[in-house]
Length: 152
DNA sequence: GCCAACGTTGGC
DNA sequence: GCCAACGTTGGC
Image (cartoon, rainbow, N blue to C red; front, side):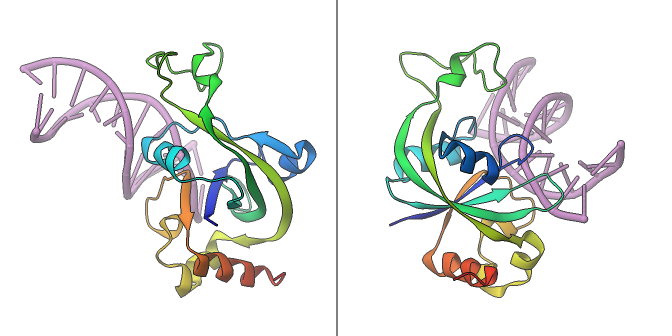
């Protein structure tokens, strides 16, 4: 089973939103590195940390699971949508999304605490200038973060 | 709101 | 294919 961390801005979509919806598509990934991982490596049943970015309390806020593997993100063809990509060919869609299912909330593990944990120093998340919106998490990192919630 | 870091674009 | 300019991300 694979482990991942997905970033989201909670003002737009948070772990609370996901809890209400139970299942949601994860649209709007417009970065090739992140797309390649979603397309090739994110598998049904993989576990996902939901990370809240660009907000008052940044950090890991909950857990979701992959309920549908990569398929075309239709928002790329909607000119009224901010995720619209005029250069994407409908015959060969450039961007994909997966569906995620709510699993549970976690007591927030702040970015500050993650940066202070030597076990997490290899995570792209805690490295300077990181902008990856989707990144792999090792089993050791997964367990370390869970440990930090005190909710193991 | 600031600004550093990064990815993308486009001229050459 | 280089690289400067530009736009975006995201923590603070």
